Length: 144
Image (cartoon, rainbow, N blue to C red; front, side, top):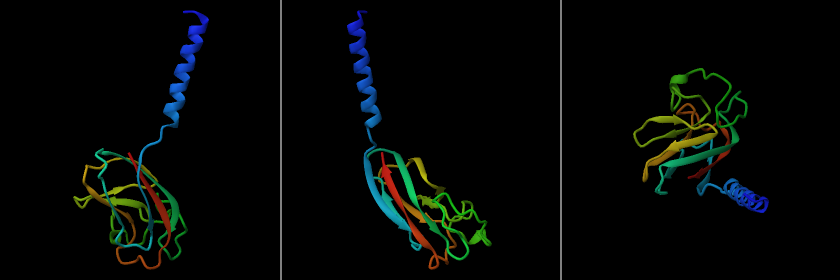
């Protein structure tokens, strides 16, 4: 292949790679969830895609002596884990309740399979009766 053709081919490939790297996921929703909200925030997947990307940023705390922390959960072990909304998941973490009633760890986020028209609820995993002393909020971005 002549040198000029190789250079042109390389330019086309690099341009395509730059375009792919600059491609952004389509944002479907962006909302705030505060640790004082015992009801959580509902979101319904009306995107037509079951592959959903969730990203969570911010800091919150379960109150008392608990330090502010990320959506991955508190570094402290709860005194009464059975009182947590989702006892099998980390206290102070961002969790998601499915329509089936099952809870799933979200933390800082990731890729999740959420059925079209399924409604999920994002919740701060705390004692079900102790949201009043919490503080802080996180931002949740949902995309496909």
